[in-house]
Image (cartoon, rainbow over the protein chains, first blue to last red):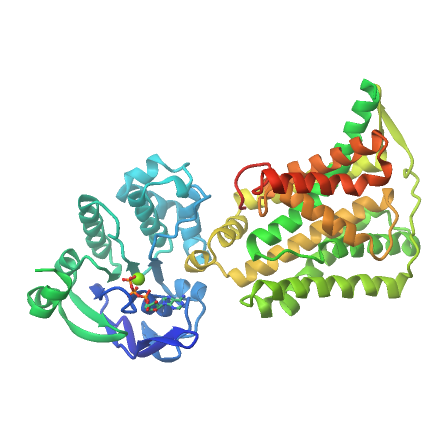
Length: 235
Length: 290
Ligand SMILES: Nc1ncnc2c1ncn2[C@@H]1O[C@H](COP(=O)(O)OP(=O)(O)OP(=O)(O)O)[C@@H](O)[C@H]1O
Ligand SMILES: [Mg+2]
């Protein structure tokens, strides 16, 4: 098991958001995390990446405990994150954003190679390498956030609301890119609202409701599940 | 005012302004990354002045040479203050940090008072009053040396910020702390580093001003204010803008003094400050962040 989250509890101050969800990710999988607004998906990712300290439960990555590590150490362990809202550095150029992605000493030696790879996946970023991150379009910012995350040579990539606010065609393109990323050997944990496309590329999925896992199954099963179809696919 | 005195005043203003810029850049960098207005900034400058003073008086070390000691010492002092006093309140409400830096400043200035007494002191070096002529303009040698060192220090800092991994980590932390963490940047370390760099800049500026300025325990408070003016002129957290702000303040002060308002030197800067706040609240030089 690559990632094992067990009975995770977490919140903000007195407000508890996660009430013990458990989930697993196998090496090489694409696992999706679905759920309505406010279900706690982003909170779960923030706990996973070390931006929030869980109040209970365990997180194990590649057999070693993760919970409680600061975020910069979690990246060093091999988990990169494309955060909700892209969060590119607005006053830094595309290239500088990518260089930051390879800030960790272990990623610096492969920096030039990683950057070439990112530019070949997203030629649009190569064209705009000297442009400030804040002046990119929403779609380009999303590409940059994904590229930046890949620069740290992760083994697990956690992506939050990648398709939010993107034109359907571009969203589809990015889902394809996630498929390519997986075939390069990177495991993917995908938080999404776009259930239709997500379930099509996901091996397995979890549905989070009010901080608990309400449903889980293979992507194909959930696509056919009546509850999921009603709640998330609007069918 | 004749053309020659005009040029003379301008040159003097620019030279002093360079050192102001150095004080201001430290404050601006600290604000940009830590979101803290460091009310003890000028007091660190005073500590730098007294350090160079002691080294000169008791060990005969030239003030400019003493930078080789003051810079590493300032780095350690700044890092220690950040770790001990500021890191523990990093996530507390803003006014906590204000109280903390005001308190730090009081401790520093009162320690200086305790150690050195209240009366102003100065040093006389062989070059304290020497000048060089550049065409019709006469320039003070210590101010020229100080300006050259300032340019070198600011240039080095600019290079670090623009071109190195540490510099990029500092700018990233200023723009989005969580996102910087997600790239593997230890932002607690960056905050310590930035406070340390800011302290070095303030203390080095103090050393550079010692040959041309009296030193007394509360000399810092005026400079905290000046640094604040420089920072606001340049745009809070805008490091490059602080250079312009420093030169502008230095020039405004010396112009005012040349026009007969010698006693109002400090007031001139504050008037400029209020005008900028009224009409360009994000600073004279555009954008408002590092
Ligand atoms: N910084 C915060 N302080 C307090 N409460 C928060 C904070 N961030 C999120 N919450 C609360 O936690 C709950 C879960 O939020 P979270 O962002 O994890 O949801 P989500 O599943 O990602 O939703 P969305 O799909 O809208 O992004 C919400 O009720 C939200 O109001
Ligand atoms: Mg969310």
